[in-house]
Amino acid sequence: MDDLFCRLGGLGDDLCGGHHHQLLHGHGAFTVRKLAKASETGHATNIIAGLALGQHATALPVGCIGLAILGTYEFAGLYGIAIAVMAMLSMAGIIISLDAFGPITDNAGGIAVMSELPKEVRLITDELDAVGNTMKAVTKGYAIASAGLAALVLFGSYVHELQIYVPDEVFEFSLEQPKVIIGLFLGGLLPFLFTAHSMDAVGKAAGAVVREVRRQLAAKPGILLGTERPDYGTCVDIVTKSALREMIFPALLPVVMVVVVAAFPQVLGPVVLGGLLVGTIVTGLFVAIAMTSSGGAWDNAKKYIEEGHFGGKGSPAHAAAVTGDTVGDPYKDTSGPAINPMIKVVNIVAILIIPIFFAPKEELGCQTVPPPVPALSQVVPMESTRAVMKQGD
Image 1 (cartoon, rainbow, N blue to C red):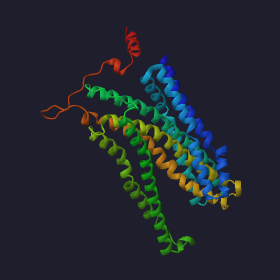
Image 2 (image 1 turned 90 degrees about the vertical axis):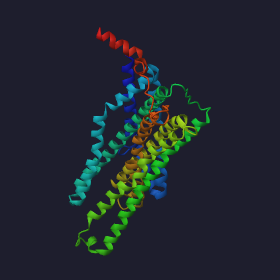
Image 3 (image 1 turned 135 degrees about the vertical axis):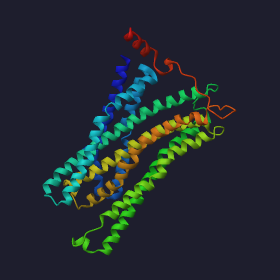
Image 4 (image 1 turned 120 degrees about the vertical axis):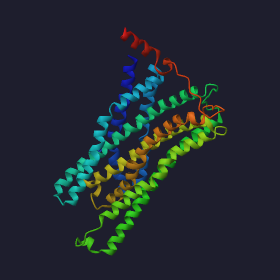
């Protein structure tokens, strides 16, 4: 029965996060209309309103995650949180299909424009694109919430693995220890560094494309008149190469940070690394929710104005909304969603390097001492074990 309640807790967290994002960023939502109205007074007020909206958006999802952790832990401890995570992951098929809806409708709108289809077709694709933006916001909220719960389970696994590989030492992750505070600071810094470098990557790639477009327009004036064909392949080549090259450092950053902390066990070591994991979870959760929320709201505010509100297309409000949408794209499509795998990578790498850096070594051969096999009660709660034995009888 406890397992059932834990599953319901995970599904309830899914429902809370998804419904919250739909209300906050849905097409024509109150917050979207408020952001569109802020565009009337200029580009700066649009950006300010969008950033504030993203920060407001962190309250309800984090509250839902906290309640889910509290409830499932009371029912079955860390095992209950793991059950809740598995319940959330069981929705992966539906989430992936919803996430695919957005790019499909977005590309359909682009094809309609390039094919010079009637205006009525573009109106339909715009409505579908707005729904797709809401769908993407819902799925990103799901991914971030599942990452928060899963990371807590992974942190528990990290502590458990330390007890197995280093049985002679007792590790206490108390806030009274300066090393834990240092780890929290380092972990809190990691999402900001990661998002900063990923947004730099987007900015550099976009700047390279703009310079190439300007070069082609200067070399071929007939492009604007439709008498000359632009070189699309060069722009695609720039974007593809930049995407691979510029993301090398952000991809290596979480791995290198964990390895560096673990490589100096006398100065930093497992206690600092444990604090780093918790700091990454907490800060990354807030940054990811804020960035994806702001980006989705900026996009839908632009579409709301394009429907004819606040002056429609070509108005000063529309120009400000386009600026907000341009800023919001790397927020909601690059940096924000990427924090989810970053959190999991940090925790998994920390678990994997325990036998390499922290386990005692034999004097001959420097081979890691094999860990003792944990008792079944350490892995599976005793109540679940008894239930399985009764079913076998």
